[in-house]
Structures are given as structure tokens and as C-alpha cells.
Picture 1 (cartoon, rainbow, N blue to C red):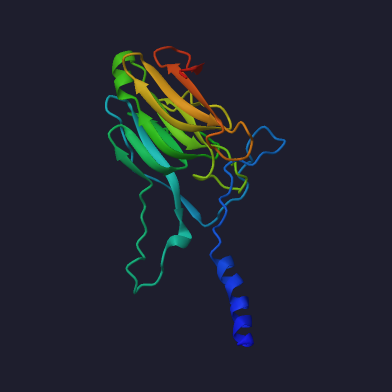
Picture 2: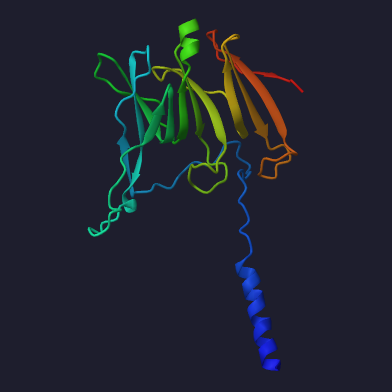
Length: 237
């Protein structure tokens, strides 16, 4: 009987240890630097590739989403049906491109040259063409939701980093960050009646590395009909 109790005593702690839930990592790790850590590690198993061009209705530019293909993801077992690679980088619905896009290339119709949106390391999750704004103001604008800083210091850009809001012209020119560093984008929308883009962010005011109910919400709008795309903060609550 004593032996049995000893065995149970040894087994039970192991059981509870194995069932312990993994602690979620913070989204922001603060250092003395005012910027997020640079992504230094280069994964040599990744292969760059681009989707076939996309042309938004009424525009004079072709858009090429650029992403990466994991070479290690391929199964070289000829007997397996899972050895087919997907070369698709993005998905396109009406006036919006989504995916895990590393860059965007632009080519004006009738010209051979192709230009890049940026030379910085970014992970673009969505690109939206503001068609109704273009019809009203003749300004052809793209809205980007992306990660541009390694805020959790894990030496990579992914969905665990802070989301930011950017704008550019349909040509890729005037590519500008609209949201502030270290403020997580919550959502955004366009009101056609005012030609304004409204968006909300959350700031980690207690500096605990997470975004929760104790942090501060910020509200902004941008006048899309003007030449200067400047965020103006307002307080609706």
C-alpha cells in the first residue's frame, strides 16, 4: 500500500505540469530604443515570388503582390499527394487584396519599368483601393494594414507584432505611415459623405506589453480630399 501511494505521489505532479497552459507572450517588449527591433535573421529556405498582376477598375497601374514560398514546406515523397506547392501569394476580391504580402510592385500601363512600394521589411495583410473616393475626388488611394516593426522582439515580422495603417497613391508614391508607432490599429472605415477615413488605435499606456481594457483608445480621421494626408485626433467619448 505504501508503495502504491509513493507511485501516485510521483505521477500526479508530472500530470499537472504537463497540463499547464502556455503563457501568452506579450505583443510589445520595451527597450531603451524608440523603435522596434530590426528583423536581422534571414531565412534562406524562403523563396520570393509574385502573383500575376491585378488592375483596379479605373486605374492605370498593374499591382504585383510579392511574397515568399517556404522551400521546406514541400514534401518530396512521390507517393504522397501533399507534394504540391501553392504558388498563390494573395487573394483578390472587389478592390481589396489580402494575404501575407512582403512587398507590392507597380507597373504603369504601357511602360516596362516596375517599381517597388518599399525597401523595408514589412508584412502586408491587406491592401484596399478606395474606389468611391477616387470617383468623387479623383484621388486614387490605397490603404494598407501591415506590420512594420518587430515589437515583440522575436526577430521576425508576423501577426504577433503591432498592426499599423499606411496610405499610398495607386502608383505606390507617397507611401506614408498614418498610425503612430506602438499604437495597435483596431479598425478603420471610410465615410463617403465627408471624404474622410476614420480609424481607431489602442495604446499600451500601462506598458505591460499587452493591449487590454486598462489601455487608452485613440480616435483619428484623415481628410482624403486634401493634398496633405494628416491624421487629426478627436474625442467622441
